[in-house]
Structures are given as C-alpha cells and as structure tokens.
Length: 377
Ligand SMILES: *Cc1c(COP(=O)(O)O)cnc(C)c1O
Image 1 (cartoon, rainbow, N blue to C red):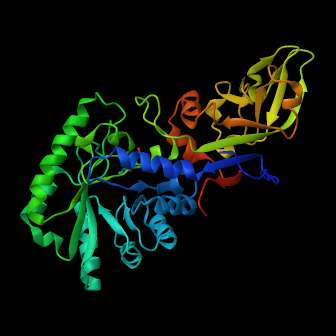
Image 2 (image 1 turned 135 degrees about the horizontal axis):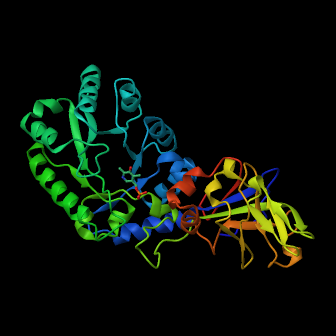
Image 3 (image 1 turned 135 degrees about the vertical axis):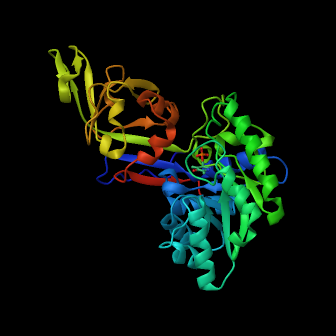
C-alpha cells in the first residue's frame, strides 16, 4: 500500500491512498466464497463508497466483475460512461422524469413499488421496446420494495409487465451483520416463497446477499451477490479475524508542534487540559474532511508504531494530537501521521466515533491529495 513514488501533497492537508489491488483481491475473495454458480457483483454507489467511481469500477471490471449496482440514475450514467458493457442496476429505481435517461444509457432500474413499474411500463410503450428491470420485494426492511400482496397481484396479472423483461428479483437483509438475528431466517423464508410465486413469470435471477449476507452462508447466496462495503475493507463486526484486506490509508500533515510549559487548554471549548511537559501537534485535517467531530477526545492516530490520542475538539480544518510519546523529530511540521492506516482501520476509527466504517468512508472529503496504488493501469 506504499506509493512507489513519494506522494506530492501540494497544498493539501492530507493524503488518501487507495489500494486498487486490495479491492480486486477482496472481490475475488468474496467471489470464491459464493456457492458454485452464484455470480459476484459489486455495489459502487456513492462514488464507490467515496473511493472514486471510475478507478474502482475499472479495477473491478478488470478483476472479472460484470454486474454493478448504484443507487441513483445519475450514478448509473457516470458508470455507463466508464464501463460501456457492464450490467448496471439502479437501486432507487425510476420515475417518469428519469425513465428516458435510464433507457438511453441501458441501465436496469430496480422497481421498488407498483408506481415505478407503471412508469417503466409507460417508458417501454413509448419507446416501443421491451425494457429490462429488476424487481425488489420487501421481506422485512420496510424501506423499499413491493409488499407481499403487491407480488400476489402481479403474479395474477402478467399484463402489468407488458413491455418489461424481469431480469432479477431481489431483497435486502436488515440484520445480516448479526448472524443469530431471527429476522435473517424470516427474510430468507419470505424471499424463497416470493420466488416461487413469481416462477410463472419465467426465469429470472435471485439476489439477496450484501457483504454481510455472503458470510451468512450458502442459503443466502442465490444467483447474484451484491457486496459493497467488504470490497472496500469494511467488515461485519461478527466476522473476526477479518478476511478482507484493508484498502485505504489516510495520512494527515502536521502543521505545528509545541511543547506545553505551563498547563493550558487545547481547542474550542477548552475541553482538554494539557499538563506541563506534554507536546501537542496540530494536523491539517478536520471535520470538513470527514474526520468526524464526534472523534473529539475519542480517537487515536499513529505516528510510526506509536498510538497518539486526539485531544480537544476536532475543528473544521484541524485536529490536535498529544504526541508526547513520539520522538520529537518524528512529529515535526510536514510529517505525516496515520489517521487510518495499517494499525488503525476505518472500522476502528468508526468505533471511536460511535458509527460504522461505511460512514467514515463516504464522509471522506475532496480536499485530500489522492494516490491510487496497486492498479494495473
Ligand atoms: C448498499 C447496498 C448493498 C451493499 O451493502 P454492503 O453492506 O455495503 O455490502 C446491497 N444491496 C442494497 C440494496 C444496498 O442498498
């Protein structure tokens, strides 16, 4: 994960290094976990969880991935520009306004309720084409998806699907990260029964598992898995030791370092009292960069092997570390400290903030210098 050339930070306050080789390896690892015959797709919504849609999707395509998922039509169009031949499903589906764009870009909307089905049917009629679609059934998430009675009605009235070719039926697990949760088995049973009732409509793929769902075992794999987080090094809490490789390293640049002579407070709100003899380093990364304010007084960074605490409040562009335990020459202005790195994963940082690794990744701002390593480009 070390860049081959020394990174140029230019004026940035930090460096985000993204290991494309690790993403490719994680995809292959998940693919190899699936039951024979099941396909491994990839979820690259939200700019590939904040890591960059184009380089990440390109990497996954080269690794062999052909089935991609995004949340928004706009994300689907950006992905289409990067991958002309990929199958791209749009989770949030379609409405009358977005239907022409979806059709022209060859995107597959996930139909989440009968209104979306009607909009897509109208688009098919208008274009005089048969259009592909995926069907989302709600099995316990109560967020998006057809309810059971909608499915029964649909199976009884195939004309509702005029001009539409269903490629897939999918559902989403609410508690996959908690293997013992009874909702997993309930959702699985309901999904299986929905599949049966759709059988008269002809063959279509079934898809249930996100990253954590893959680790629930083969019953959950069906025809196509939809991992996102695990590709990017984020793992379900229950899966230890983690089988996936870390993907990112986030380094912040020290701007100033001082030794405390007389006890004094640090930062907004004077929440931290620094004793005489402590050394405080100020790093050019703050909550505007996605280093969450909730990490104030709660997180750790690393200088080399040494763990150093974040002290005082995280401010918009800066955070402060107590670097007393670090040799002085390693904590000088210009030195880089690991905010996320080999000794402190995005999941570790998330625990310190009281959140999940997903939020840490997608919050990472645009002010960092970025280095992509390990890609075959
Ligand atoms: C985001 C998302 C996924 C991917 O979930 P991960 O936990 O990141 O693997 C899969 N399916 C749906 C419907 C999603 O919204």
